[in-house]
Image 1 (spheres, helix red, strand yellow):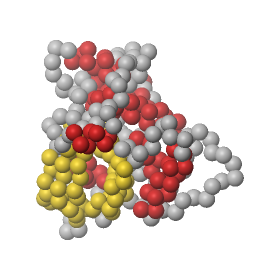
Image 2 (cartoon, rainbow, N blue to C red):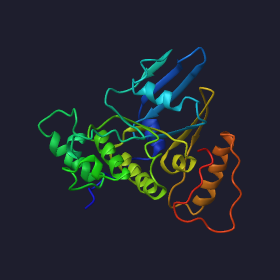
Image 3 (tube, rainbow, N blue to C red):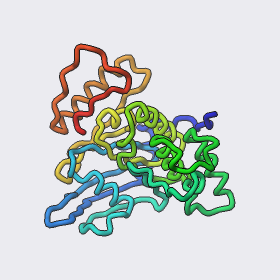
Image 4 (cartoon, helix red, strand yellow):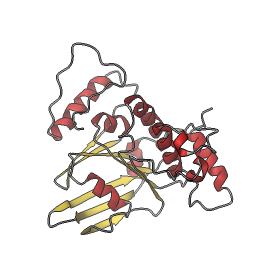
Length: 269
């Protein structure tokens, strides 16, 4: 049984007019050697806004996410970061504790007399009812990522930071996880920053796609592709070409046979 979800949020345009940024970054620089990884990044993310972060390997995507998560203590640099205390991080590896059962992983560190009940509800939201007493090794990779997502959202974060959370999953599981994350982000409405190498994933999930290049924001592109738009597939393809062009990747020539569902080529991988 699926858990009920809240109605979709108001339009992104009205949100932008009505709310101040939850995440605010100005002039952010980070370096691990003499060469800088981030070189003056500016970024705003509002409540309920989903931002996907693209860029070539080594451009600073994960470094930016770790800076927002306050996990980059070994890095030098400066700039201004305003980020809520209530924040959660989801990594490519689910990072579940193997000696704790699923529910105990979800509520780890969570205070309050209702922690267990909140954990059960979170597992219901990620479509894992009845798995509270399972061990992590009994779950598939997709199920483990659902638990990691439940662990993040049970804390009702104001900002959710996701570092390639679906990168290790097979294509069909990724599609299911895209739908789940989109639905949960609309229900809970945190500010979301998703680091990804997958252009299609970025377009499907995000309100905005930000491209990093040489440690700076090279592009910040709005995604406006309503599901009911009859021209959605054409506009999707045009945006995909635009993003791939900004990433310096040529679009692959179409094959002579139709692609199978979930059989997507990611030229940036």
